[in-house]
Structures are given as structure tokens and as C-alpha cells.
Amino acid sequence: MASASLFKSSLVLDKSEFVKGQPLLRQHSVSVRFHPSALSVRASYADELVKTAKTVASPGRGILAMDESNATCGKRLASIGLENTEANRQAYRTLLVTAPGLGQYISGAILFEETLYQSTVDGKKIVDILVEQNIVPGIKVDKGLVPLAGSNNESWCQGLDGLASRSAAYYQQGARFAKWRTVVSIPNGPSALAVKEAAWGLARYAAISQDNGLVPIVEPEILLDGEHAIERTFEVAQQVWAEVFFYLAENNVLFEGILLKPSMVTPGAESKDKATPDKVADLTLTLLKRRIPPSVPGIMFLSGGQSEVEATLNLNAMNQAPNPWHVSFSYARALQNTCLKTWGGRPENVKAAQDALLLRAKSNSLAQLGKYTGEGESEEAKKELFVKGYSY
Ligand code: 13P
Picture: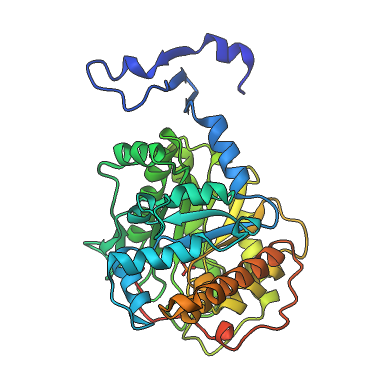
């Protein structure tokens, strides 16, 4: 059992003892305390990480995921007939971050690297606009998915090489949290190898992020692809989250300073069965209660191809009773779809598009508080957004 006396007798080493002759990435020191039965690595950023995570997981607010890579942003722009130029990406991202009062519903925005260093069309830094809106800037740090050799056509997520120095630079640029999205495919297995690789990669990324002051969003997306029943998703999710938390603990990740981004437990998108919001909420919360410690401050769901309204209804159903963690959203498609269509690349539609974004953000804010009624939603917002084999 840990006690003050045990702690005192622990050997205390400063990180500099390990890195003699190597440049330190930052000035903060990290103390590593050894005891025969315990090892705990404590980043000097611990207090800040806890504070950042709590701010992002604040009541009635969630995350706007706007971290589409340039290639994915190109697909979005193509859907409204626009070319994938830097100017068009900048115009769209300016529209999103300058929506008046967005910070009332949105606590964090995940950016792609280009946007972290980008200015609005009026020349103001996007990061500064976010901070003015009371929104914490975040950054996608993974380098995308590639085939996992030796698996059943599954993938793994790249990006650990150079991550520490990139993370330090992102912190300097104003980012305070990070995102790493890896995926698990049910129709392709998932193989034990793919689950282990996904969990290990997430844990290494989480440790590196915390060491550099960024709250890691841990996102093992269980893809909606497939014809399987909801029970199969539940079974796979239990396996995935067990491994993720095993490796997070093994990597000495501070649970109070992380956020999770799970998929909701639903039937496969190609299943003939559909699940009600109550059923989705019931199985998703059962899963989370079995696997996620209450020290984790926030569960910020991805939308994964659900329609805008479906994602909001499911979130609302999960917030009908108090939960051990803040249960909220980190949607990309389910926040942006109607907004993007409404804009259509036309300057005269910017205000209407921002209103559409604000409406979705407000609906999800209400759902976070368990108070969404689903009234007055457009047909566009009810359209399923699932794309088979979708790559982000
Ligand atoms: P969706 O909500 O579109 O599934 O996006 C998830 C995501 O990881 C974006 O950061």
C-alpha cells in the first residue's frame, strides 16, 4: 500500500539524470520515483492536464472535431462542388470558428496541423479566435492509418516517430489537447494482433502527449461497417477497452488527464436491425461502467456515420441519469453536415451556415444535459452519414 513513509524512502531521480548529454525538450522537469513495488512517472504538467481535461468536459459543452486532413477536407469540399485549395479550406474553417457564441456549447476544437498554424480570411490567428470564444484548441497528432502487416486486412495508426518534439511544438503554438484515432474493424476480425497494436499505440501516444502538456483524447474507433448485431459490437468494445486501459496503466498515463472518444455501441451499419436510442444508451453505458474508471473526466463520443439527429438522440438518452463521467460529444460529421451543405461555398450563405452549426451545437449541448427534445429538426439532419469503408 502506498503511504507517505514509503514515498519518502523512495529514490527520487530527476529526468535530467537519464538524459545527460541530450538536449531537454522543455524546461519542466519530470521526477521519476522508484519503489520496489511501485513505479510512478509524474509529469510536471499534471495539474494543468487535469484542469484542461475538466475544462473540455464542462457541463453542457462538447468538442467540435474539425481536424479533417487536407485529403478528407477535400472530400468535404468536393461534396459542395469546391476545389480543395488552401483558400477554400481556410474559408470553411474561418466560418466554423467565427460562429458567434460558439463557445457556449463547444469547449474544445480539434484542428488539423494546417489549421493550428492558419489565420482566418481576415488575418487573425485561428487559435486566438478559439481562445477568445472560450474554446480550447486541440490538435490531431496521428499520421493516419496504413495496412497492418500480418493481419486480416486490418490497419494500424502511424505517428509515434517524432511525436514528442511535434507535441512540444504544438503546445508552444497553443494546443492543449491532442487526438489520435485508430480503428478496429469487426467484419475483418478484429484479430488479437490488431486490437493489441491499436491499444499499445494509443497508450504510447497518451504518455507522450501528457509528457508534453497535451491532454490525450484516446480514440479506438470501432467502425460501424458490417452486418453484425449490437451484441457483437458490445463484445468487441469490451475487449478493446480492456486492452486500452491495460496499456494506459502500463504506460503510467494519468487517468485524470485524459479524455476518451469511443464509438457508441450500435448494430453494424449494414445490419437489418436498428437500435433505439434507449438500447444504444443502455449497452454503451453498461460497457463504459465495466471498463472505464471514474477518474476519467470525460467521454466524448464520435458520431461515426450516424445522422446528425441520431447522434444527438443517442447522446441525450445516455444523459437521462447521472454518470460517473461527463458524457458528451466530439462530432465531426454530425456537427458539420448541414452547416457545410448550407454554406455551399457561397459568401452570402455564411451566416445561415453558422446558424446551422450553432443549432447542432446547441442541440448536442442540450443532449449533454439530457434535455434535448428532438423537435424541429430538418430532413437534412436526419440523413444517415455512413459511408462504407470511410477513411478519415
Ligand atoms: P465523426 O464524428 O465524423 O465520426 O468524426 C470522428 C473523428 O474522429 C473526428 O475527429
